Image 1 (cartoon, rainbow, N blue to C red):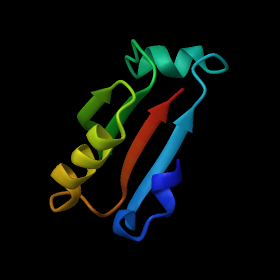
Image 2 (image 1 turned 180 degrees about the horizontal axis):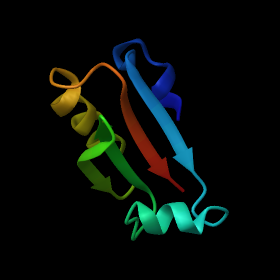
Image 3 (image 1 turned 30 degrees about the vertical axis):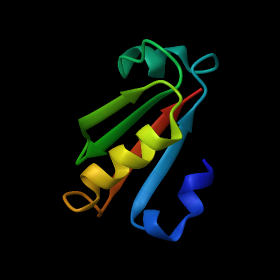
Image 4 (image 1 turned 90 degrees about the horizontal axis):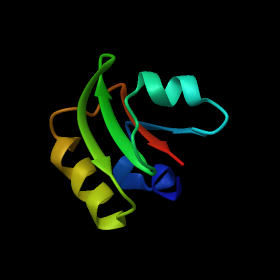
Length: 78
């Protein structure tokens, strides 16, 4: 969650879900592997990245930054 404190990620809300402690949440979100990172807008999933890749996460954020910067959530599971 270190990226959540970076200035270029202002306007994004990061959430972490422990899939072992909240298996029902993981199942409802369709998480099949860990880590999984999802971008939501107005409660709807608009993008997903599966696997641990800092460059992939940064790319995902950059892709959606211009479109969705208000009340967006990136959820990562571990």
